[in-house]
Image 1 (cartoon, rainbow, N blue to C red):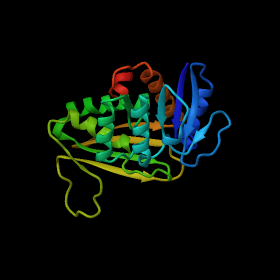
Image 2 (image 1 turned 135 degrees about the vertical axis):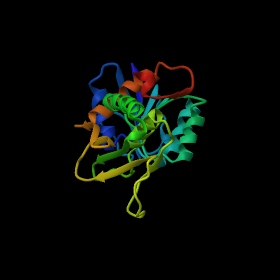
Image 3 (image 1 turned 90 degrees about the vertical axis):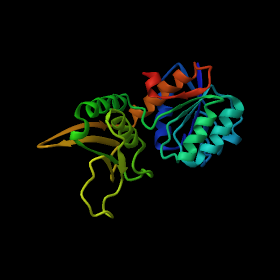
Image 4 (image 1 turned 180 degrees about the horizontal axis):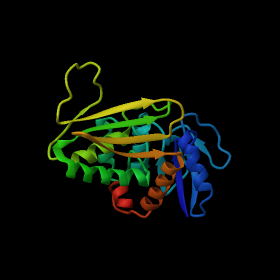
Length: 250
């Protein structure tokens, strides 16, 4: 049985992960970590990684970028692999993750949906076929509570498109302050926040007299939680340090 330490256990995604683990005989949540530190019915909850005195085989993190330092220290000090499902990391924090991955296995993805990772492959191939003749725009929509913008998934999709293009594009996030025509070698990324939208992403290829759109719609958060749980099972079998992602899992 794989024992999981769940960081961000009191959040929306944390509760979904807990429900999935409770129905899986191969998994057990041995402890939770949450800044609120509220006691759990099924497992003990600690206010910080440093306060956690319960062992586990792997950490699943659905918390906040501000929790990264303590979480990485915990994992490196105790040699516990980590699945990082939080988004909104700064470039400096991404470097911290890379450094920690030299000591323990770390699985990081901005999106754990199987469909999104298929979408990344499709848009990369589309960019390779359509090349410089089509303008690329990405529109992402999420619920009103989401803090970071653009979403980590939108950036993943932009990177996937970039891999297929014959040039190195510039990412443009905000056009209202620049009054000029769109430049050819750009990828525009737009964010919408409202209501309870779980997550919608559309990549638009706009050419002469035709438009191609490739989209993904998430109907529930369970698809992300399920992917993170699959990643935890995968990572619990890894003995070598390294940085893993959905391409390794798939």
